[in-house]
Image (cartoon, rainbow, N blue to C red; front, side):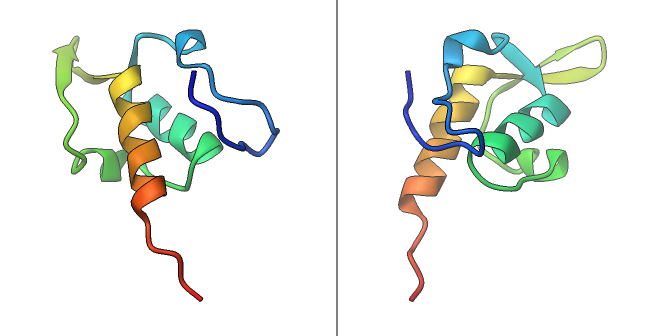
Length: 78
């Protein structure tokens, strides 16, 4: 389980998420728990996708790991 502060102060449990998310659902999860992002932005992230019924599905665990990495590596501005 990844621990960080979300708007409702609840830690994000990756196991509580669906295994795969559409870009819209993935953007909503990242926006709620990490930082604002749009589904269009996720197209540019280095995430593997599976096309099912015309929808791109992203593995939730990969999405959360990348978002956590981006947040931790973001420079702090004074």
